Image (cartoon, helix red, strand yellow):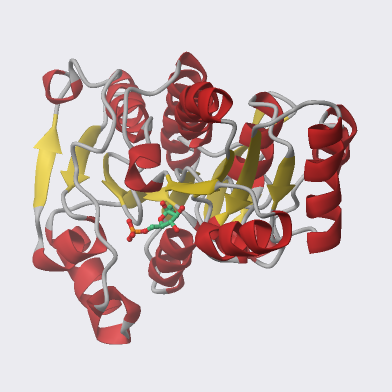
Length: 319
Ligand code: F6P
């Protein structure tokens, strides 16, 4: 394989640039030509493709976002859109494609492979919701952003003796909420993977209050619903002053942590190596700190597993 391409798709994630850099530099290292596809699958359909060089990925390892831009494409969901995408790749003489994104992006990549075009996926999403990999690129940076925000909110929560309900991203997965809740010492963590019991949440708040604690932090994963609904319920049952913070897209930005840069560099290089070995229809992952590759079908047929021992640990420490 002599000519390959790389694109980013779906919600961006800090570290995507480091993965692009790694893919480009690894390809050049192997004497291959590598192209950047701009604006995700939409750009692929339009032929928004440019050759990349060592220089075009200089000074990006520390930058959030993606220099290739990202999009969620409606047209690519159609058979006609996928056909156009393959034609564009062939027109440029490209023989393999690396897709950096989440599970939706991988399903798109799989469609291309089914049409005879080799693809490899790299998990890039802050949600950490991809099966068969311990971590996705961007999760660690988003986690650190959330923890930093909670630490700041805690200062004012303490001064005003208030209960704060903080809503974090994660789509249907509770990873960001759970890890941030443990790392920031939240009183309660509400995630989709665990049934929430309002009586339990209220009792934990009252137990803290009886010990003299007049402020509380509760983390709500967006996958369970709106933080304001929980704030209203808590206010109704305790009579305490509550405030809601929805952290929003601040969680998707910022310079990637060293962990995410490492992960992205390892995964970007591995994806190129896989194409060079003639492998396709696979995603790169990390398991027990080893880079692995898994068949798309195998990965996408599974459900992402949250480590619920962390939930039990957080509960036992926030008493
Ligand atoms: O998948 C990443 C993510 O940030 C989710 O956590 C969130 O639910 C979603 O994307 C938000 O998407 P958009 O940026 O399209 O509003």
